[in-house]
Picture 1 (cartoon, rainbow, N blue to C red):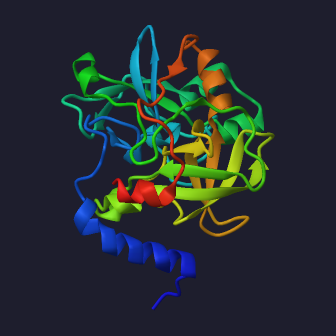
Picture 2: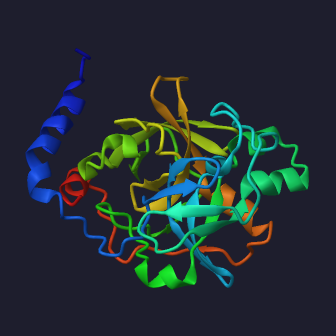
Amino acid sequence: MKHRTPVVAALVALVAAVAPATAAADHNAAPIHPGVMTNTEGSGQCTSNFVFRDSGGTYLGQAAHCSGTGAATDTDGCDAGTLPLGTRVEIDGATGPGTIAYSSWNAMQANGEADENTCAHNDFALVRLDPADLPRVDPTVPGLGGPTGVGGPGGMLGDTVFSYQNSSLRLGIPQLRPKQGTVIQSVGDGWSRTVLTVTHGIPGDSGSGFLSDSGEAIGVLATLQVLPLPGTNGVGNLSHELAYARANGFGGLQLVPGTRPFRGNLIEAILDN
């Protein structure tokens, strides 16, 4: 039997205790929200992060590598194979597919981007929603509330962060989706953070959003890492990624804030899912 730390064991016990009573307590009545699953045609399943809007439409954010065509180890967006813009994306809760409107990988390859940190860590895409599905959208992160806005380029060593991760490998158990973690390293000249969460991200969580301890949207889950610590998460810096998108055809792009306040309480988030 695998060893569990006291924290993990306590969380497992809590989930077992509350799951029967709270299975229907998700406060996001609208079916499309941060954390719903996306499935990109010809690529694979990921988790959405936040809701965005500009004059061209309303979008769900996901990781650019969710439309990659190479191996899971192909993480350099300037070289990796990627599907074209316009590729269809199935979205949980939507009545029709979305389409990839922007991908940092496509943009960097079109630009001939040469900065190695940008190439390695700029992993962000926008899925344009079908207009018919806009009444079905709630920008609030389930359980946690927020986001309250976009965070700055900070996220220093020791900062507390939160996430909502929704891989199908969790068998649809909603109490396993909210996460709390700690920033343990800044890498790539500020393009990414290494974050340790209990429990860590798993395949299918890619693209999940990360929130600061004040509810600001600060990052996108890009990689599941073995260094510097096994089970850590590589979280792209959302403020950098949005700046790149705005410089490449999405100048008016804005995060849509959540409709309910951010609480930043993991136990309450678990109980509300």
